[in-house]
Image (cartoon, rainbow, N blue to C red; front, side):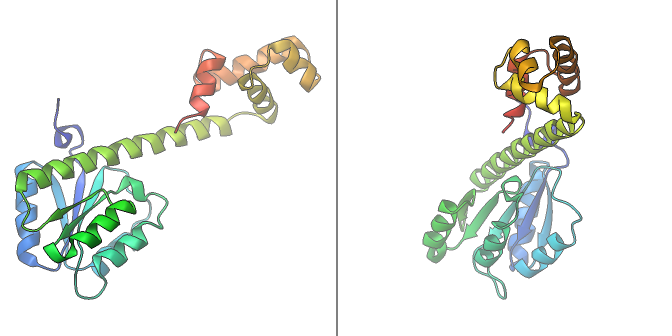
Length: 213
């Protein structure tokens, strides 16, 4: 199986830690796996960077986040991330000292991807990073699929949507025609156009497309 760095060469890891030596060591470690990273010396700096983004991430990414830092703590930043509608596309892995392990465990229960206790195993950490990036890629793909389906739905006329709703509900053409007070032939024409615009060949495919997670 190809590594995630090969499948997504533009994937990025955000390193948020006030210790310069830790940031440098992590950046070097990630480079050995051909993974790109960007470093921030505080939670405040990373938050400012995110606020400058014009849109949500469109490439797989994750955050390696120190629990305890001067200024805004990693936990406070995490609470902010949880309010973002696209947070699942940017998994968080906490870097914790021994005293912070219970706190990190609690953060995982509330949605963090994982935590790694310092000093951490290099291979184990990078393995978790790659798993977090794989999850990010999956979430981004799902969100793209949702947008694609919604764009197709938006392209339908009001009458085509009416026909689509009844077809998905399982009604045959005759009953659809009766419900909408139109001819069966007109239903067939609208049904054909709906299938064409939605890129499906059957009512089952249409229903599955509309259930895209």
